[in-house]
Image (cartoon, rainbow, N blue to C red; front, top):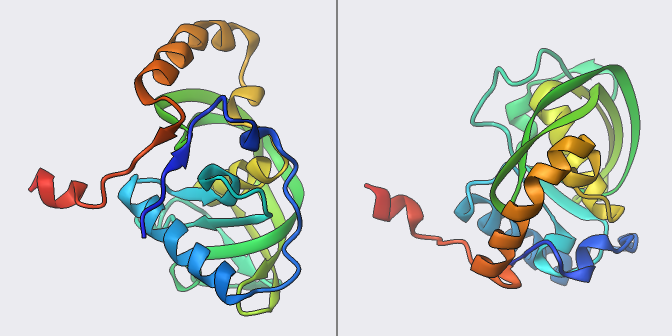
Length: 197
């Protein structure tokens, strides 16, 4: 089921989310809904608070661009990124590495808005995945950026918190207009691809 996505201004986006203590049927259903919602909204990641549930759960899929990373390791061994997509994880712990890099980011809780965000270029992430296993992922590029972005959501941090002061000033009006247009939620269209054809 495609869920509504919470828009900036809703207090759930500022909550420090609760750890997931067990992978229940309810969590599995939520994961399925989040994946459907992310695809319907043409996103690369989605965190549970973005659908109004303040728990430490996120989904990411960057398999559409296999060259978006230069390296990908799982538990210290080279791995094929596409084999691990979508990446569904709870309770992430990040160790940020590498030089800071600036790139454009968007966020499904800020429809049609993008900004330049500076982040470390590499990440080593300890992730509990939904089959109960805990893995350590090391990567760079878009996947490293997406893992950091979604983990920020779980800590009540938004991408606009990481942009320059000048860019924040420039976005104020656009954010106000976005909130007027969308209200409290963005409703992704699950049939968008069909309509475009």
